[in-house]
Length: 221
Image 1 (spheres, rainbow, N blue to C red):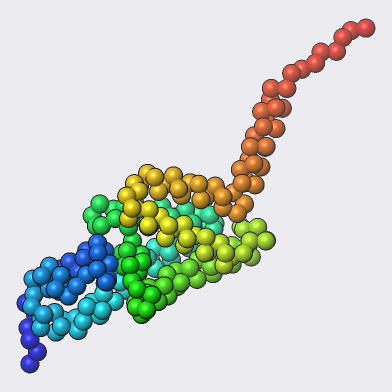
Image 2 (image 1 turned 60 degrees about the vertical axis):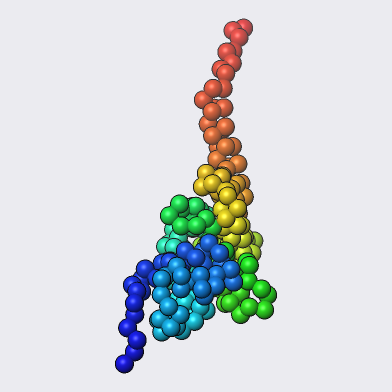
């Protein structure tokens, strides 16, 4: 008969999530986790097998939320709207005062030593999100939403680079308002955005010019 658990499993996972988010994988020790969860090492191993397995469980839950967010964003009618929904939702997440600043995945990945297999695993999870965006941008180019010369792969890399960069900035103390300003700058450079904006201004200028064009009276001869 197995050893009975002496703690609430969900509460333990939430506590571990906070520790990994705040200190990263390598910065969190087994003794840190057992003390925070308030269990003995045997109970910990019975429930989670190892620190690495607990970390994988935490990250899989976290990335499931990210996948859902990206899937939802990809339902937007335009590629620019996809990026905007993803950026603003992510900015709100990584500045949420209910948990440590930044991204759990990035906070855990960056301090990992190069030979740690978890570093590659985390990179692969991020790659999956990028490929979802790439697929959506391929469709956007085919429909004419994006200019024909757009590289969907490069655009997807740009999108995730902006997102991961915001995560680092948030972890370094950037506010939600500052990240929103960054998003506005990124969207202003989105393919087709400048041309559309210029076209809109030119069209408006033509309407205003016609409306206020001075009338020239003909002189009577």
